Length: 150
Image (cartoon, rainbow, N blue to C red; front, side, top):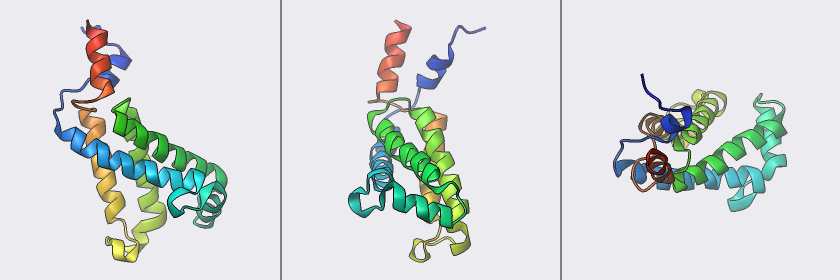
């Protein structure tokens, strides 16, 4: 029987450097998309506009859904870049991508040219891989796990 605590399991990772190549660009992408939803940065519509759109596609209450999606993307993206609490952040982001695929993209087919789900599917695959693997090297998770084991 193991003495491993829940937080030890969340932080633990045997992954190598490959996850860094996933975490950094995908974290930046998610943080930027979250900033569009939350703050209206980078040409986004902010909470009001995003909330109105979300309500129009059946995600109600729209403002709350925009706040939840924007927060998951912005803070989850920052967590991926930092390598901090990557498993829970990636799980929240994976859930957000499932919702995005089935609420906004599935009826448009696969390809991005038609606003399809291919980009969201790629992000879903990466976030699921990070849930399974953990943050990997060059992450705060690994540093905290090492420190906790000493």
